[in-house]
Length: 124
Image 1 (cartoon, helix red, strand yellow):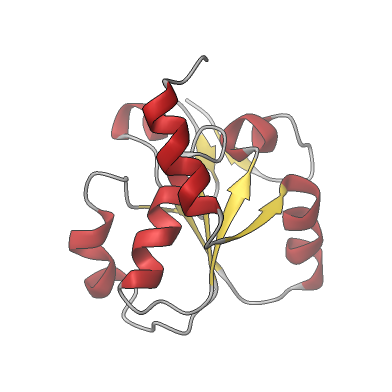
Image 2 (cartoon, one colour):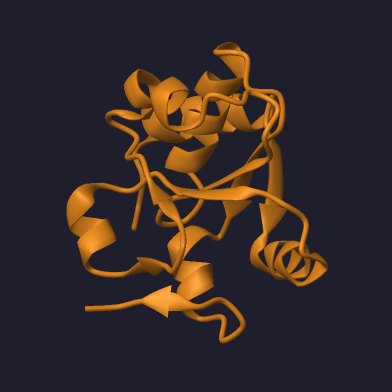
């Protein structure tokens, strides 16, 4: 997908402030057993087409509104994913502004997770 220059500019700006990990690093996190919450920030139609088993669905459109109710512990480690790692970076930036202290954007997103056999997925 080709993204517009304006969108890329705000994503790149957000990425200067957020922590990222790639899919290989996420697999290592899973293997370590370290406690975290995986949050799918994609739209409902994307979620319905497939998602990581056990992920929490809070789309970019509603996460800021609902996150404090769903995940009240602002120190909990949150790993956010979207389609490729752009929207999740924007969400991570906003969650940090809301006081969430341990937020990570997954670079590679669903596309990278889908191609990884070590991550369990729920598909229709």
